Image (cartoon, rainbow, N blue to C red; front, side, top):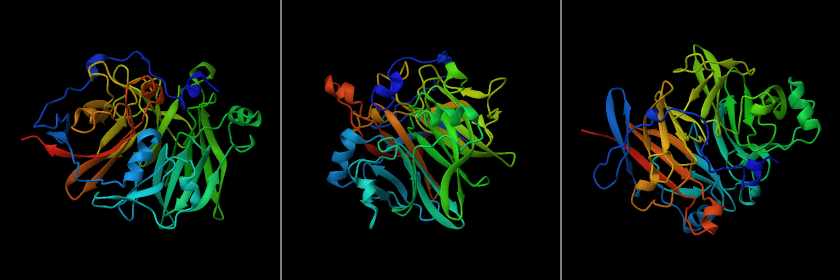
Length: 381
């Protein structure tokens, strides 16, 4: 196990990288919400906490407070937002973002210690699937509305096109899935294992209805070939009719781009580098997109965020704004951002933000909670 992995599921709390502090986006106080701003299509928006949305059962709030280690995603057919809360279960938020509830008739595994450290909703052959990367139970879980159809666990070491990755698993290398995404054109899943010495991205394929490891695999810690140093989030985007796999390397403060075969590509906003370099101290946990914007929840504070972490809003590789949940009334204990799911309802953009409770800080008397909160993007007139 790496030193980072031994400190509560790979989380570290120190300065990383050599970035430009000048890239840090500015904020704006508005009304009583202290709403941070971002720009989109020439307009400025501020984030408003919507305490009337995302109502949660008391048992869900209690489970999240000390155990939330999550991201969420939106079902492409039903419009629900879904995640798994450790020791509580698989939950969904209705398309109008009104209330969270347990998914009916779900497999008992969801309430038995697994989490949704990474989440991805996708369509395959016209059917909706929910995939989760569970660090707690060490597996990728693929389900259809709570009915589990696949559990991808530790690879044996003979599945991939990459001999280095095969050798790592053949020797029993640690498997800790941080995130997962489905590639619609390639019809494969890509998983990243940033909490492991291997620090690889790797693929799984479906054949005759069965999911199994196989195909492309790449990466590795920087000191053994790189390019990762805690590959933590993975997402897919289309560029010039090509699928691009984006991977957040948390300790680098970078987002890398790859083809589905693992070849590095330049993302929008990059020059010579094959990565987006984020503002100084950035520790990105997950990646999401909507309307041309990229959203990156950061685990740790930036130099000017008063000891609490933001969600960066990016456009073409550059910061265009941010959200700081802990600045909003009633959310002062959302210190570490782990997930963010953007949702379009009609003409309005919302964001579902999820924070992680740092157990070490809580034991030392610095309270921080696992919480889920919903924000609305309101145009600044």
